[in-house]
Image 1 (cartoon, rainbow, N blue to C red):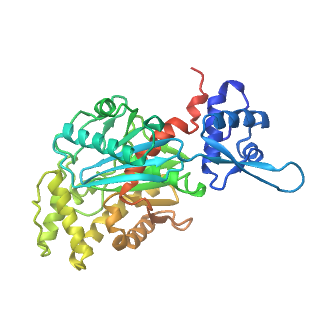
Image 2: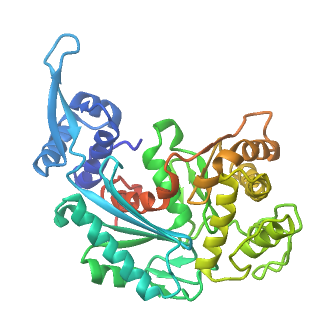
Image 3: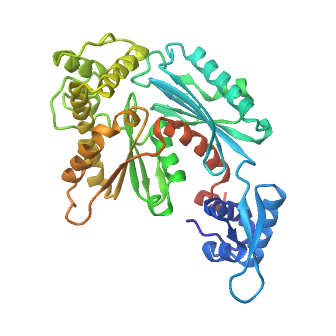
Length: 409
């Protein structure tokens, strides 16, 4: 948790530190406890709390008696005072959520196998869906902090543009932020899917798990989000986490991007998976080399076969996720983290068959296994993890303490 400073000119940072402390306190927190956890003076605590009360972001809930002295007033978060919207564009699904200040989902919408061939129409569909769920939620539009739109990389966050995502045909140099802002009349930011998934896990996890972990995002594409020493690792262009061309150690097919024949991208491309499925006797209606919508439908076919008890489909999925485990183990060697969270729309459908195998692969691959083990678990956020991360990114940008705010400009 961040600690504050008693220098007067840094009031905004202190307010963010105190607000974050109140937000994390599920059962409320007193002013005395805030002073202890933040390192701020009682006067600074009092001034900031008064502002938060005036803005309606917190309330004085009850008093508690703890030993001699004056009873303490407990401060509680007004969790529904402000909300944020998250949109996640995965080639196989579009998810939209509204979160309150606790990170709780108030409303959500899932559009399975959306037609994403025309970016303009897809963006219009996103905007319409956002308008609908804001209306359904009953939250005044003035209480919506903004919209976090989550997309596959690479992207240019300064321009709000998707550069050339490998699994979305026709989406080269597509402006996401500008059109959504014009349609919704709300602030919009863009976030990479892997980074958004880690933001979601950081917001929703407990304090012990927020500092150092890797999120393996498994959707139509595969990527990694990394949290190191409590900070999201973004890289200099906000495109960190591209792990598709790490070696799996297994020869599959030539990659049309990096040229290798053993990378994760090649191993998990749909045409490779479909070819293996057909060789093993699985009948798929989707073409091997279809568009984004057809590839998503094809993966859904394989998952549906596994869910119906088809052992061939289950074994194929386990092999695919084993490749993810091999790469995750390499990341753990590089970063020396203690936790790997597997998340994403596809992982939410297959974790029951794959988690134990992937856990074993990661820990076997980890070179410091005799020093500590790697905890490997599935996200509890399901297919909504990306959209949740987009909404959390909006709240993070608006409300969370940032060390960069302390720099003189």
